[in-house]
Length: 238
Image (tube, rainbow, N blue to C red; front, top):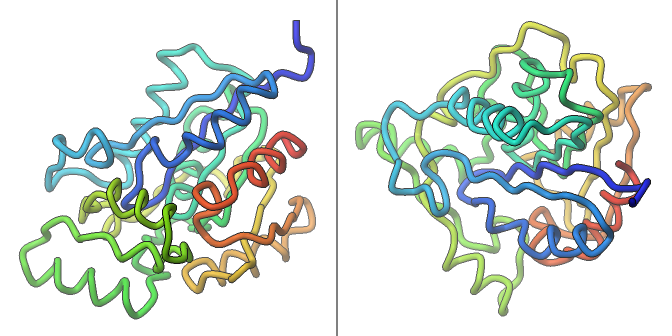
């Protein structure tokens, strides 16, 4: 029996799917951990379920469903980018199943805030185009928008990205408890280069005296470009 075994549930960000964690999951499993990489409704291989009714709450229900159906306990719940807002909602709902929260360059939302609150100019332009078209799913930015340079990683990313359900950005996070719900929280910041989408989240996390802070020299989509570095950080911090 591996006494250092952890259960990781890795939640992807916008336009991605559970597939984006493939390399990190492989590394964590080699270290003896159990790993689950759910895909949120309307994304990745679940893109055929796209609908106008998908909101941030839908993603929260997706992940809650995985933890409950798989009867997972003592979970290290990891949220990347916009997926961190989903993680916050899950922690609000079922903290008894969670051991700790890790935000991987995650967007930190407070109660009542939406993803749109922190959009960059480019992201807001994409959102506005979708709004004017009647709330259609908005297309993904190019891989470089996630910090991934031209090459094989960018090619893989571009093939796999899917449009984002409009309602996930326009709907607000609704939580009843303080952010993190009293669980141990760690923030892993990707700083090579830092991404403007999560700049305010970096500042917030650093200001939390009871949170752990870790920086890694990788781009925003570190799980794509630097999976070993990400897996090592998760292994050490869980």
